[in-house]
View: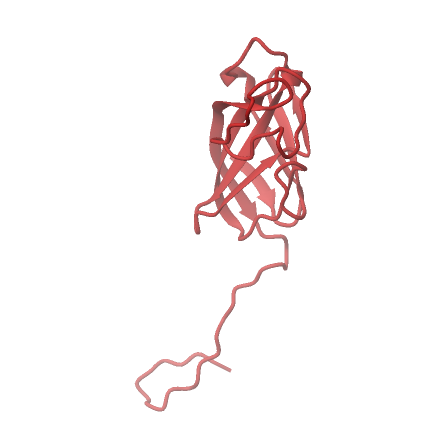
Length: 159
C-alpha cells in the first residue's frame, strides 16, 4: 500500500521489473503511466512521474503536487481517502519523449504511427491501494448548526 499526504509530492516505491512485459528493451526506454481511481467518487487521474528511477528490485516514481498535467507528473488529488492505483508499462523504441502527441495519456490511447519517439502502452504491470491522508488542518469535518426543536421529546445538541 502506498501512503501519501494531500498537498505534497507522492513518492511511489513499487516492484515493476518482475512483471515487466517487454524485456528486450533497456529500462531507459520504459516509463510508467500511473492511474489513480478514487474509491469514493470514482474520479480518475493519470500522470507520468516527474521523476522515475528503475532499479533491480523496485521502481521509484515521484508525482508532484500542482496543477494537473499528465506529462509533467503533477496532480492535485482530492478528496483524501483511499485510491486504487495501476501502473502501465509504456515503451519507446526511439527517444523517450513525454509530451503531447508522443506519450499516451490513458491505457487505451494509441498514437499513430506507433513507433520511434511515440510511446506504446504494453499493459498493466502492478496495481494496489493508496491511502491519501489529510495534511494537518487542510480539511475539516463540516457540521451544520440546527435550530433548537420546539418540542421537548428530542435530544438537542447545540450551543
